[in-house]
Every structure is written in C-alpha cells, then in structure tokens.
Length: 202
Picture 1 (cartoon, one colour):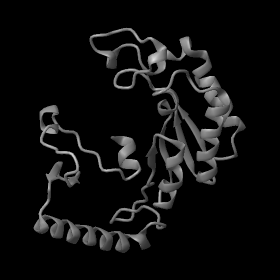
Picture 2 (cartoon, helix red, strand yellow):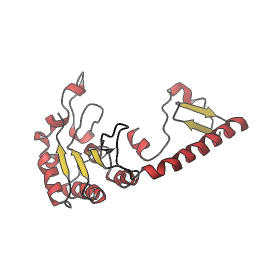
Picture 3 (cartoon, one colour):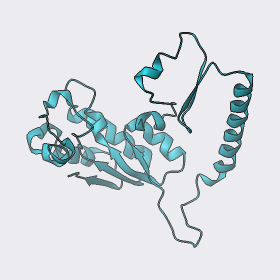
Picture 4 (cartoon, helix red, strand yellow):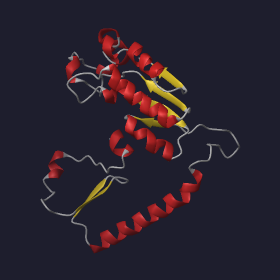
C-alpha cells in the first residue's frame, strides 16, 4: 500500500467473496479516497468522476507555486517538510514535490521479495542515488527493520505469537553481518557528500 501510494497507483482491498461480483471485461472504477469500487459505472457516475478529476487537477495547479516554498506555520514557525520513501526511485519525485529532505528511507524494501540479500554494491547504488537527488539536503537512512509485517523468506524467521515484539529490527543485525549497520555505514561513506543520518531501529 505504501509503494502504491508513492507511485500514484490506485489500490483497494476487498473481501474475497466480493471479487466474484466483478465480471470479466466489465468496466470498473476504483475510488480509493472513499474505499469503494464502482462496477459498470453508468453515464451519471462517469460524469461525476470526470468532474472530480477536473477539480483535482485545478487544485494541483493552485498548489504548484507553493512547492518550492519552505515549510512554515501560520504563526511563523519554520517546519521541515520531509518525505518518507521505501525505494531509491521515489527520491526524485519527492524532491520535485517540494520535500526539503528525506525523513525516512525504509531500506528493508531492498531486502524483501527476493531470494538473497543485496550485496554492498547494490545498497551503495541505492543510497548514492538518494543522496545525489538530495543535493546536500538531509537524508535519514533506517537500517534493516525486518520482521513483524515484513518477513524475508531467506532469513528463516522463527514463528512467534507476536513477531512485532520478538525477532525483528535491530535484533537481526548481529546474525546478518552482510546486511549490518556497518555495511550500510560504509555505503554512506562512499556515497556523495551530504547530510546522511543512520537510524538503527529496535
């Protein structure tokens, strides 16, 4: 869901029983703002969503001049507008949208959905890309926060009643020397100069 939102991909979760109501080759509209799927929308529904899309585009245009302005509250307090990313590819869009830095780079996405952990070079290229896009702006890189809702098949994680309180995050660092904070730190040292901060989860 996090990645879908980052890349502007509509995503809606439905009950398995509801899927049977969707017929092949039938028009379908997803409204992820209200969490509804419109099956075979009629002319009135299509017109309504067309007007909604036009309104969204107008709002987007009105906000464009604000993108490069620094964050500040109504009473004049400065506020840093930082973006959270899960993939290096998201950095460019984040800064283009006005982010003043990366508040959290979730590095676990480099490790999940694959047969083996990334080597140092792959990690280095990912961190390097983000720091290059940042151009000296703050980047917070969170070291491997694995476990709980983010399993990795190649780690052979033990089955636990509550994995969120057991083997996860920083606890996995010692057994995973190739994926450790030290390797992440070396990657950052090799990367272009910038405000790079390492955050170790517990």
